[in-house]
Structure formats: C-alpha cells, structure tokens
Amino acid sequence: MSEGNEPPGEPGRPRATPSGGDGDAAKGRSISDRLRPVVIVAIVVAAVVVIVLTWSNGSTPTTASDVEANVLSQVQGSASGDFHDPSVVNVSCDIPAPFKTGDIFVCKGYGASSTQVKGIYRATVTVEPGGAVSWSGTWTPSP
Image (cartoon, rainbow, N blue to C red):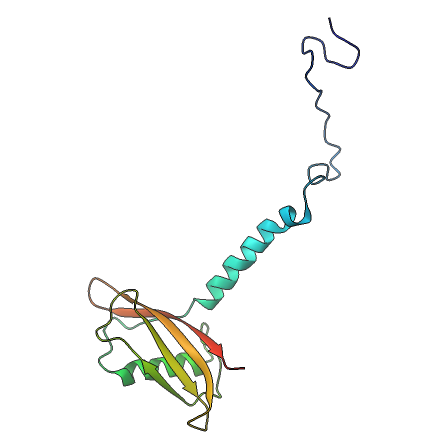
C-alpha cells in the first residue's frame, strides 16, 4: 500500500520535482566546479597563443645564421604570431646538428649592448618526411 508522500506503485522511491528554471541545477555545485570549464578554455587559448609561432620555408636551414636570422625576425616582428620586441637587435642560438624531430634549441636575444640579454627563445623542432624543418617557439622576456 502506498503512503501519502509516495507515488502510487513506487514505494520507497523519492519523487522528482521539476526545476524552477532559477539555477536549481547549479545549486550544490561548488564555484570551482562551475568555473572548471571556463578555466580549461582559458588554458587552451593561452597555450595556443603561446605556441602559434611556427616557421617553415620548405627547406632545411643550412647554417646557424639562417636560424638566427629567422628567430630575430620572429622576435622583432610585428606580424601576426610574432613577438613584437624591437629592443632585441641580435640573437645567438645553440642549435642541434642535424635537426631531429623533438630537438629543442635555445636562443638568447640581446639588446643594443651585446651583453644585455633581453630574453630567451625556446623552440621544439619538427622534421617533415621530405626533410623540411619547422619549429614552434616561445619568447620569454628577461625581467
């Protein structure tokens, strides 16, 4: 037999109540649970912004000076994806030879004084099956 507060035919099962549309679904969820999707999207967007810079000209640079010229252009440049740091006038890179996918190289960017390090450029290399070399780099200005 059914008691007064149970639906007929379902003894012991609580009744569902319709949502009032006023945020009942969010009640009981912590702020961190509700902000988690926003934080994930922000992290993904930040990662894409930091690692958007990729160079590829379809051929393998033959010298360190080729790589350094390209990195300097990326660091100083004002095009989309460049780092917009005109205070850097020279870079010096420690590049792997030969390039292999997954290699990381580092360049120091210098200001007008050849001893004043303005920042560090770090890049991860990708070598395509045809031999073309590309890399994704980040620029970290010195404090």
